[in-house]
Length: 115
Image (tube, rainbow, N blue to C red):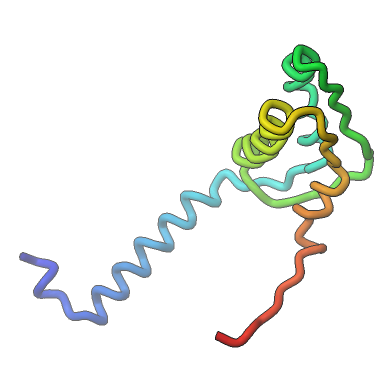
């Protein structure tokens, strides 16, 4: 077994190298995206299905909110939120302005607590 003959510090360096490769792979698709435009696209994609359920979807807001991310993943995430509202919880309004504010990193608050 070759792995057993490698020192623990060398193993640590190998794991670090592998994790750095994986991070580069995940972030390779990251682009600057307008979350407002993405929200409007999600609403448009759900328009017919929502209408069948008797739900009116509307995205408001024109101010661009830029985030760094993978477009497909963000589109899926916002779509899942809308789908849950439309198909599982009924016709409750989805406030995209509030969603954009929540997803905007400038509004994130971090705190540290004691363990």
